[in-house]
Image 1: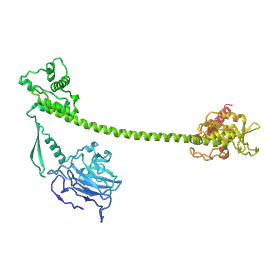
Image 2 (image 1 turned 45 degrees about the vertical axis):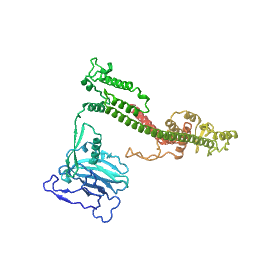
Image 3 (image 1 turned 60 degrees about the vertical axis):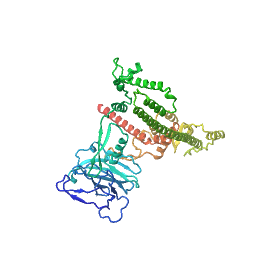
Image 4 (image 1 turned 120 degrees about the vertical axis):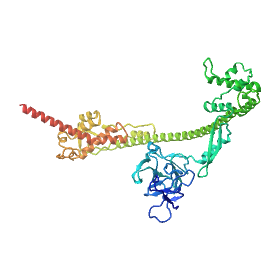
Length: 554
């Protein structure tokens, strides 16, 4: 570990805190009282690189660290910038970094700005989500402003780098100025003003108009409006007479008396220059081997002309612009080809997915049909044994069995449900529902015409138990929780409740084969019977009230 040294300065802006001497270099932060080699999760901080700034790290807990940044050079009152790396992390390790010695009272971190982060596997800078960033005044650090942000490391082999914002190093600036200087622009001049405290060059940049105003005018016009501004000032000053005729007037950028726009005159001026070049060189731009050669030959022709009105630098700029556009076009074509391949792959995957979905639907339909055939076979077997009458089992006819076997082997057949009346035994005007329960045949036929599961269940319960029994019973035999002193009533017979469910199941099976829907509708049997019991009790109470009122009147 690297041992840090600090020097105190009395009366400084930091107060009684120690002044941080330098940046941390591969500084391993260990828990208090730990002895031994660092393990995974013991973070290693480093800021000894260009634009790095982190002077001190304090271990607060396993998940929290206090960071102290160094002040600006020769100005201890300003402490804003930070840039450091963290390594030796564990996967899914969560930490909170507190930058505890900010000097600014107002910061963009209050308005949604967030620190930057990148890693070795993801070298592009990204912002930490603003919901994980807090900027506040902390009383534990003499009311200095603190910026805290939470972060979760996701890859153990990566080295993570955190910064105040996008770093712009001194080396990058020097490269940029060197590129400008190599272009030899007339209106740009670079001089060395001196050296900094750290022996770095201080550049003096001068941007002014060159001696040749025409070149500056052309360059500015090209940069701003992308249309070269041609000038005939040197021809007019020399008093030369040209044979352009009407085109000479169009080449000038003075305001027209007839109110036409300058863009029209510029467009016509370019056409006039191209026509002039073609006329004098005796060739066409379209006959050249490539557009680059066309530009070069045109520029050479202009240099050979004594009365040239378009400077050579204009054509060189146009040639560079054209080459850049060609390069961009190549990149775009590569992107289009890559996108096309991705779309083809996605189309193949969608086609395979569609085939799987259709096959799944066919298998589901076949499964339902096989279940229906099985239910038909079970329903056409021997009838339920009766307690009083035990008729012989009814064997299905051979033709019916043959039909069922043929229908089970076909994929287009969808069998119809078993008729309800075929399941129950009719005898002496009575219908046997099972378990020795008989109901009137006429009422049974009327019940089959009833619409809705609720009404069907309620009428069937009245047919089986009767109103006198229902009004003194409950479905479960448990007292209601709505009344404190409620007395539980005797429950209904379980085997009769099962008969009600079987009848309702046979009715629902005529309408749908969806097991989920059937189970959902059967689950409401107890609710329907409870409602019927409440309706009977309510009608009885109303009848008693009417009788008592009638008795009082008498």
